[in-house]
Image (tube, rainbow, N blue to C red; front, side, top):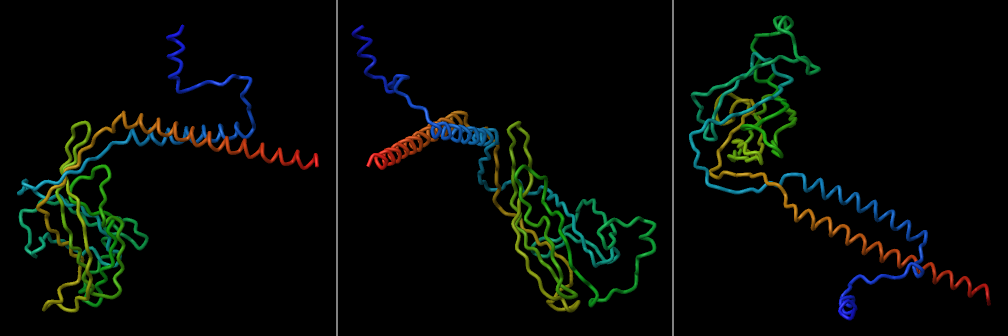
Amino acid sequence: MDSLWRLKRFDAFPKTLEDFRVKTCGGALVTVVSGLIMVLLFFSELQYYLTKEVHPELYVDKSRGDKLKINLDVIFPHMPCAYLSIDAMDVAGEQQLDVEHNLFKQRLDKAGNRVTPEAERHVHDLQSFGLDNINMTHYIKHLSFGRDYPGIVNPLDGTDVTAQQASMMFQYFVKVVPTVYMKVDGEVVRTNQFSVTRHEKIANGLLGDQGLPGVFVLYELSPMMVKLTEKHRSFTHFLTGVCAIVGGIFTVAGFIDSLIYHSARAIQKKIELGKTT
């Protein structure tokens, strides 16, 4: 018995008798509110734990010679299909040869809906267009260099550019960064990210350094490669977060409950003293 009594001295959680406990409406309200906050923060922590963590790494790109896949979807609302064409050039202006492509032109009406082949046969005007009539207003629905992966951001998606006047030249200077995305299940996605800056000017002539009206995407490959690796989040980190949530809210709730209780008692005593005097 003596040893048990000595062991009780190390109890960090001393108990009070039930007769000395006072339950109040304020304490009940604090308990309910703090319980709801605990539940909300627990599910928030659980949702964060179930998401995958992505670790980025930077390498020197040694995989030169691979073909670059370009996904392009652009709308020119004020240009006939017959006057639209596409060329592949690098940042130095050299035309790329041996290019495999699956490009299609689709005529649209003013509302942006597709025109049927029967109607298209009657609306093509093959007369000379003239530089003064070239309106390079365009809407880039999508532009990417390779497959998409979770969390990728293609900065030109949804870009809507209005030409302020005729014969405008729009240049997009693109820096392409090779990227390898490794999923948790072992799948490897080899693709590319890119950053872009835009420049525009008036192209008044076919000769000289003023250039031709059009939309130009000048790309340059980065010598560095980004490797993104998916990983599961640590379960011990999740447990630590849950314990911090429960312990922190319990402590704060106890402080608030004590403050409300003692404030209410102090006010009640002043009221009782006022009645007796």
